[in-house]
Structure formats: structure tokens, C-alpha cells
Length: 81
Length: 190
Image (cartoon, rainbow over all chains, first blue to last red; front, top):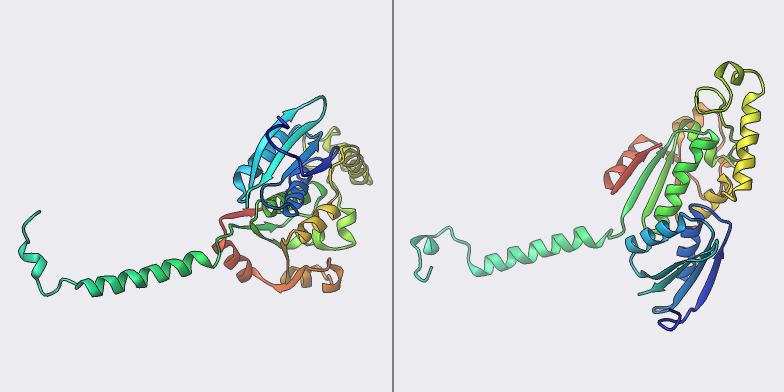
């Protein structure tokens, strides 16, 4: 899947729980340029639903992929504007 | 449809120019109504100052700010303690009145029990890497959440305006909160 997009930045929020993964993801995407992709590494299982919900409810970002690895949840968010 | 009806030529029918002017007028009004605030708004009233009840308004406020909402949290009565720089670091969990607590109310009411349950909760918060109240408050402030402290209850509780975190608005009352709620897409009382 990394063939589909290049990761610009990686945000590590492992250990953090609600609402921090979403809040920090939002702050990190603010620093991206249009088209760039942020990788978010989280251990909070709620981040799967929360980052998806945040991305669909927020203008200017798009969730391009989510992966459930061993104890780490990976999210890929593209800035669209 | 292909023939003119008698009504079409009646005197009270607006002319094309009048209709065009009216359309322009309505378009202007619509633009004004929608341009000013396209951001969604959330208005929360925070009335509680126990450790457990301090979390929901701050979690929702910071999350809504992450969604791009304009957020205002109006704090009144014990909700003021969340904004109080010193008291916010020592919020307590009540051991009585909550049947889900592991101790019976008769025991929970003993002196010092609130301190015990608060310590237990603080340990859980720390072990779970849950953000502290102070961290959530400062994150929310950074994200542009507006925190207001009700003037009437500041006076009633004998607090000083300088006791609150920097960035907290004082000198506001119910009318400010009501106006804010009237403009908001989401209104919550916690």
C-alpha cells in the first residue's frame, strides 16, 4: 500500500488515549501541505473509529488507509486542501 | 402553456427588472447569512467540578476543535474549578452517591474516603496514559477553544479573576451563554 502514496511525516501517539490521538493528528495535519500524507501510529484501539470519524467530519483531510498491526494501529491521513 | 393567460398581463405582475432586483437582494442576504460563519459551533455549559465530570467538557471541546468547530465552554458553579489554575490540579472524585464504587456508601462516607477514591482514580488515569485535566485544558486553549468563567459564580465562590488560567474570559453571564447557545450547532450542559 505504500506504493499508492508517500508518507511525508509520522506522528507517534503510542500510549496516548482519547482524545489525544485525534487532537494531535489534527495539529500535525495543520503543518502539512496539500497532498502530503501523515502516518499516525497509535495503540488506542478507539483510534480506528475516532480518526475515521474525525477525517470524514473534517474539511481538508482524507483518510487514505488504516491498518491494524500487532498492537499498533496505523492511520494514513492526506491533506486535501 | 403555449398561450398567454390573462393573468400574465395583469397590472400587479412584477416586471422582469423587479424580479431580477429581488433575486439580487435575496442572493446578497443569503451570502451575508452564510459567509460570516461557515464554521460549525459548539457551546458547552460546564457546571461540575469533580474529577470525573471535568473530563467530558474538555474532551468534547478539544475534539470539536480538532473537527474545526468554534467552541465555547461556559463554566459556572463548581465548573469554575476546572479553569482555576490551582484547584484544577486537585479535583476530587466523590466516593458517595455512586453505587458503582467498590465501597458501600456507609463506608464511603467515612472521613478521608474521597481522598482514597481520588488517589485510586488518579493512579488509573496515570497508568492508562489518560491526559490530565491541565493537559486537556491547555491543549484546548492552544486549539482556540474559548473558556468563559461566569462572573456571578466567581463572586459567589469568592474566587479572584487572577486565579484562572491565562486566556480564560471573565466578566460574562447567562445572556452571553444564551446568545452563544442560540448560535451553536451543538449545545450541551454538563
